[in-house]
Length: 295
Image (cartoon, rainbow, N blue to C red; front, side, top):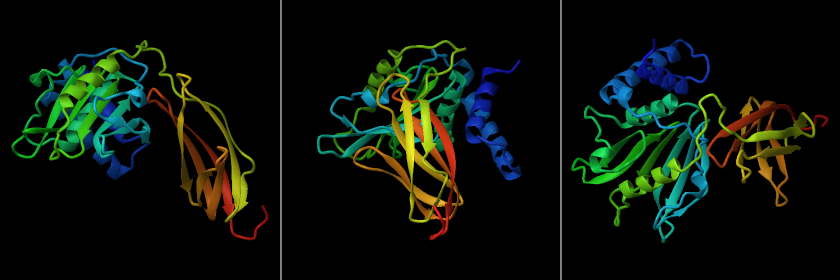
């Protein structure tokens, strides 16, 4: 029977290797898993409380006292970030969120956060400062004196968070402990979902091109519709892959088109970020030909 720690390490390795790894990548994959297992043992991950699984979290509506939130941005398949600025519109705090399918995967994401900054010393817990931050939480300090909190990382069920002070030297220094507690309270108020139910994600009603081939300097109209899982605005972005080149532009009427700049095969992927922090993606293929070829 696998231990909780082994499952967490396996989840962490799966987050790193999304596809079948090559030999060098497999070696890195194994090293990362072993490192996570070691960190998990050091931080007692087997004994971490396991919070309820939730539908995600609406980071876009989070309010933090004295700060104004900007728009959420997608980073990869699961991570979402949002900047918070002060009255002078200077960005002071960054909030990262990682909505995972399982509690084990969120705990693995938390261990990954620790692994990126971990030294020989064990990081202090948020509970040691009297801050309530879900299942488990850890503090990173700025400088050798460790007088100012640089970041706090924590997990609440299947959602991992990291709150970062963008300039720990600046005054007034944001009270990350207080802000992380506020974030935790908001996250705990989010609806739960049974372990055997899929997370609600953006739903694609359509993604189509008006044609599948065009020459360089030509464009292809994109017809897309994505529905948010909570019936709120969904944020979308396009990724251009393959041997061809181009970019997607949206006009004043909201119509999107692909503009071709380099010949080759193109895989055009639409990423949809739901209001609850989940991401869904869908792709279509097209071909870009040299200038002067028939449309």
